Image (cartoon, rainbow, N blue to C red):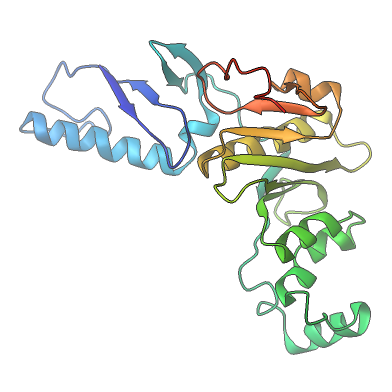
Length: 252
């Protein structure tokens, strides 16, 4: 059986194969079920949990009948071994600091001007302390254009050191086109971390409704991830499994 569904605002139509039952029991828990409705409810609960924990992002993909069929069998982890990637926490960044920490940061960086949100002036300060430039994503916050900001760090009990980050912005008010503004990893960090940052950035903006991702970053590794030269310069990646428009100016 093919279960077909949409995920958030992602433009793709996804599908996952579910075996028909051969016994009156849940395929999830193995407990007895007394009706087809109860069995279907168990399947739905399992899919809901899987989707909530990244099923779309971590699955292998195959186009079949116009659907993106997901297969989690032997799928690689979305994060490279030894590292973890997460979104930059933007809510209550300043409130999470103690009064002494806030005072110390104002002395170090100066009080934010009236034109700069306090959130923007503090966001990602731990990355800045690790030697990474956070100017672009902070400015995108100020301009209300930030679509995605991810961080990479060593997967250990401390969640440190921070080793990279990536940011994307919205190009239009309809949030159909996202721009990959930056992707950076620290020296001696495996390139797989950079690739994972880009992949997860694409996933996140697609789930928010982006139909394509554009970038001025000219890196051969981006071609391996699906980006192609665009008319007028730069690179473009379409997030839908459907063929891109045939209009010769579509990639401009």
